[in-house]
Amino acid sequence: MARKPGPMIKSLNISFLLVLVVLIFSCTDKVAAQLPKKTYQWDEFVMGADLSYVNQVEDYGGVYKDGGRQADPFTIFRNHGANVVRVRLWHTPKWVADLNNGKYYYDLAGTEQTIRRAKQAGMAVNLDIHYSDSWADPDHQEIPAAWRNLTLVQMKDSVYQYTLYVLNYLKSKNLVPEMVQVGNENNNGILWPTGKVSGNNFNAFAQLLNSGIKAVRDFSINSDVKPKIILHVAQLQYADFWTRGIIQNGVSDFDILGLSHYTKWSTVQTMQAVTDTIRQLVNRFGKTVMVVETSYPWTGENGDSYNNIFSAADAAPGYTLSKEDQLRYMKDLTQAIIKGGGKGIMYWEPAWISSRLNDGWGVGSSWENNAYFDFSGNLLPVADFMQFQYTF
Image (tube, rainbow, N blue to C red; front, side, top):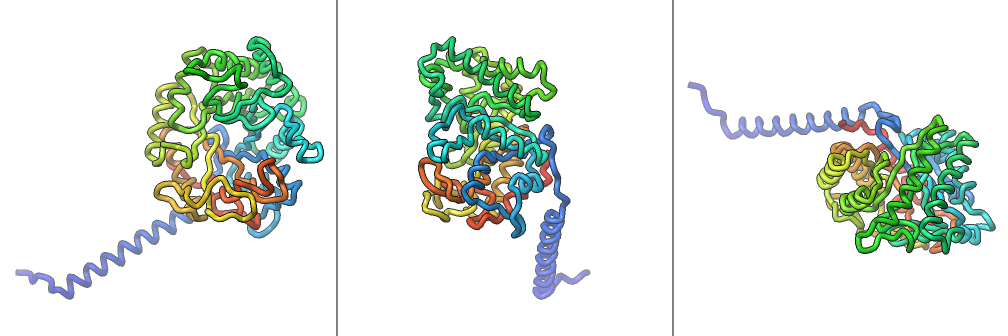
């Protein structure tokens, strides 16, 4: 009869097994770390970055570094896997010009500069038309000064003619965007009060959206580049109701449902909930779904005198505010989007670092702790999430 192992032998066996487990996991981590990077094509999966602020940041002393060396930020993003640059367009932002010696930055001329830099660096473009002279979001959708006092019929024509003009102008410069957002974060409509959603009445809003959509489609007839149309709602918890509202009011000819996802303002808190929500949207509406705005802080600290929008209290559940967890969060969010059937992710203003820029509310940046760069302009690990090999 075989002898039973004694206590010492049992202890040695357990110790051996523990060492073996540690070695296996250590080797697994090393293999994962050594996996070759993957550069995605934009029409395969969008790895996007909104770089609207870059020109102004650079004009006011902002410097970007990769590996300790100063470099062009568009090149930095492309080298680290970005394949789309998102850029905002305001109609006539005179208030910006008043702060910047007559330079508008976010009008058509300023947007043209950003688009040119993006395409020269080898990236596609998502043109985000705000249809306003300033920020358009769930709380602000101000009619451009040039369109005030117009009737709904006249405003529909203005949206159509303006959208068509913008695209034809960019075509004349060989800068047609691959995607066009007809509006930005339009939870409560567009061009208030004319196109404001009130009492669940989407009718006027839908008519204005369709005018912008028709302009893009009419432009595409004679364009080699035929822009994909994105309609944009902020926060995943509102997406189903909002999309039903526009579709039930006759808005159906769009390609991409664009979402903003910031855990600070979202009730969709876990990665599984992100996956489930996106899968539901894909299955219910049959549209491509992308997160076109998101971010995550790498610190709760502040590097300048301009108070940051995200504070030390704004960590997502299960994550810390650190350089390591900024990368982990973005990798996890990207995988959650893919798992739900989503086709892209765009990070909002990862290059809005501190500088002498005055945005009207402060000097510096209120987003610097969400950037891809530290307070000295050095690239952070988060940039590598764009070249991670995800499971599709």
